[in-house]
Length: 411
Ligand SMILES: Cc1ncc(COP(=O)(O)O)c(C=O)c1O
Image 1 (cartoon, rainbow, N blue to C red):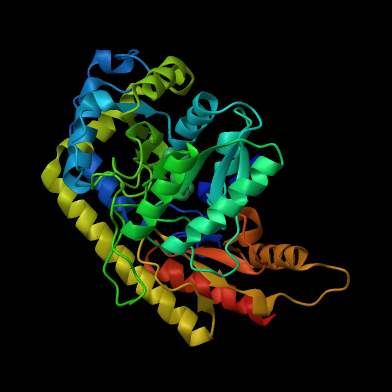
Image 2: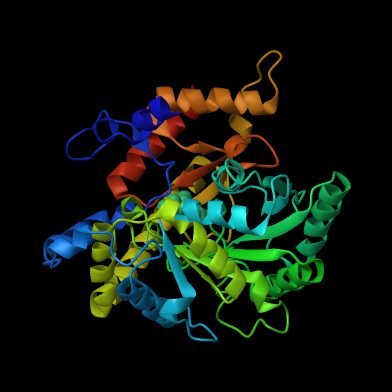
């Protein structure tokens, strides 16, 4: 794992249109590359005002009051919550995986389950499973639109099957906007899922880390983003069963700051989370950078606007390249940094190999040709041959990545 990570993510290995044309083009990892420079120049042009005390333990492992206030203000501005958030309702930890790990430990017992849609963000099973031993229960949709309210039946089928197998279902992950599909859930589907959770005493975990990366593109299937916080949900779900996660990694292009934030109105759950966050303490220097960004509201508005415009342009470019090459991809993707691409026609027949093994073969060939995209097999895809392609890059990187992808498909 470590070896593979340094091949794909190592600085020296990466393609750079200015300095390293031979490097690997990583259009597989979901980061907001397209605005990294905006963040770097903002930070460089600011005196972060570090004092000696900024390198101490701070106020404790839940995020300083100043950071929680700045984040509450940000959420109140951009997520339009029905009930405004207060700094006291927030808990910071060292990234979203820490929050998921803590939720696994506090909401369930080892062997309990969490409902995850197929396909699903690669790390959810590890985040909930590695330490807390919560089992992923992947919901299959058999090509039924998983963003329609009718999909509740599929969640219920998965729940019933799990319970028959002796797994207590404790939570449902609403990854909204969805990773890897890049789509938003319509409000009526969110409500239907809330009612389902409420009926079966299942905690709804809304992961909205891509919510400020929703952009305007001419795609009739695209849905506007509606946060779970933005309407009075108390008639659909007991507020004690609705929880929310966000972080600095995606919209705000700061994956390296390791700052995830959690919100709930469930007092007991917040108390339990607070009691174990010392293993997930974020650094004071990271917090100071985040505070500087969040408190500069004018810069933030411009930054998010630039990010959305750039993402929309890259999304359209990638669609164009796919269309020209006759590659099919999921429609309705107007959020996040990726969409779901069907490369199944290019899985080569090979003796004795099933579809998933042929997908692995294609993945290796792509890596040999120095382009990385993430295969569906590692994202709980329902059928082999699908890949998540990340487009949040400058045009030259995207075109080069796509050139290598096509070259591989033609081999
Ligand atoms: C849906 C989703 N949630 C959470 C995360 C984790 O973010 P981080 O570990 O940077 O906090 C990711 C990262 O890819 C993600 O895609």
